[in-house]
Image (cartoon, rainbow, N blue to C red; front, side, top):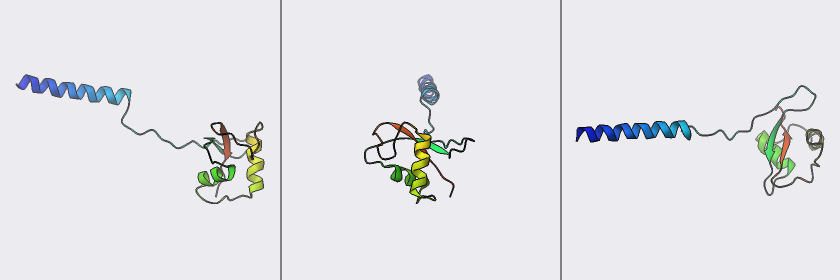
Length: 103
């Protein structure tokens, strides 16, 4: 009986170690990193567009409040970061560089 118990404990420890090494037990960070460049372009985050998103709603969500810059500045910086895109024609499922400003 004692041998079965030790075998059960060893199996359990082996399974836990296997799960920890293959899947992991720590949650994956969902925060998008802020990228900063020294080219006169503002810091930005790469964001995937979902249904209902607008440039302003995304920027305010990432700022966690109102924008510290005028909307015209946001649009200009967005189009500078994404030369192939227009601020008023975001496509669902595509990723864009969204400017992030210091408060």
